[in-house]
Image 1 (cartoon, one colour):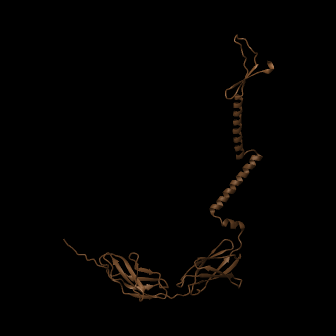
Image 2 (cartoon, helix red, strand yellow; image 1 turned 135 degrees about the vertical axis):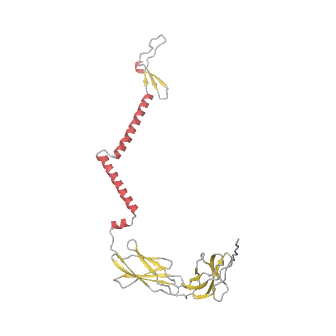
Length: 311
């Protein structure tokens, strides 16, 4: 039986630590994985960084075994030190050589990116895409616009938190020139230039249906068709005495007639009159026929009334 001894150790240190994409607030750290993982797979990498001269290290763990980590929340125009160590099931390995880098100072923002979109009516919507803010938040966008035949610019101030500017009201069938700059506490960016064309005034019907969805247009069509059918049916009812409305009317009237006929028969039964001859005990008629009138009510009670005319 062959018995082999497996030695488990911490990883060796990563190497070739590099800094890239350094700005006022961000920096990207890249490195090479260590030559030895210590006999156990590496779990993650630990990146530590601090301001030069400080003793407080800040830790960031990599996602799994990725060899790229982004540092955020940095101070502008500040020198930092950074180092990297690998961690496996045994523990943390040695740190790499320390690297230094300096963040950029605060400056004016970069020109914003702009894209346009036709609005409703005489409006035009300009989309504003923030680029590098220069290390400080954008305070506002300054939007200047005019027609290509005018010399005087119109100015619109847009808050820095907004991502669009709405220009209104504009002229139909006119080309416009736009100049957009971003401003932070340091100053203004270089301007971004943009042009767009407002079309001719649209037809009212075309404008109405262009603002509606397909479902709304179909619904309006069905509603108009239903209204037309109702009008035709009403015309047939009054002019030719036919149609759906006439059928409904006849059905309701026939039911009402049948109900009233039955009620009349019941009333006649309740108020029926009986004229019977009365006889004495010896068999002779005490009174002539039709001299006594017996009225039978609906509650089966009798009312006997003598005939005064024959008394």
